[in-house]
Figure 1 (cartoon, rainbow, N blue to C red):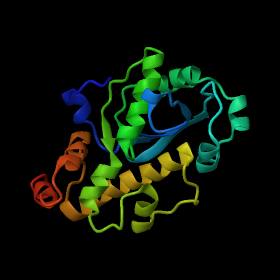
Figure 2 (cartoon, helix red, strand yellow):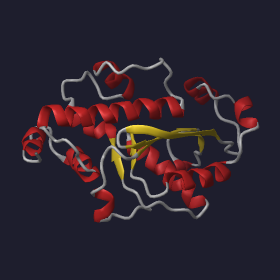
Figure 3 (cartoon, one colour):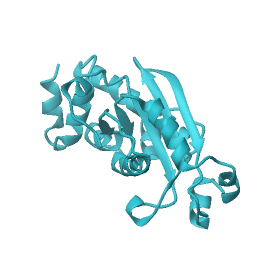
Length: 213
């Protein structure tokens, strides 16, 4: 789906779209669909736009998913179809680079839903969870809620709704950029550097970052 180009990787890491899906299950290859998309558009480290919509997958969701997400079948009855919402979302993301917490999950659903409507995107993905594993090795775990608490990031207590989770992930992302500047004097990291951090071994990450100043 994505195209790796030097220009996308060299863009500032503080200008991205942070997204989150709520879904009917774990695997689009097993028939699971998206039921909500939330996204935050960051430019120069500031929120300049958001996107949030429920979407009707065309079938009833399980009681477990209703309880987990707080999204009921009644709420989805009048929602637009996945195809309609994802067409609008494709326009929203444009050529921005993309960030998600546990990005492999969200990328699978983004790819699957956009493939259904023959849409594509040109930005690259970065995973805030994998990066946090390297930068915050002393955190008790690297779930989004745990990292929000670990870094004392303000939140309203809402989890597992797409916009709330994307807003918290955006706050975490900007906190990581601040920590790169404070701890390693990397003032304006590009998106490719953040991707590279996720690929370092835990033992090597500090050495790697010390060479990026």
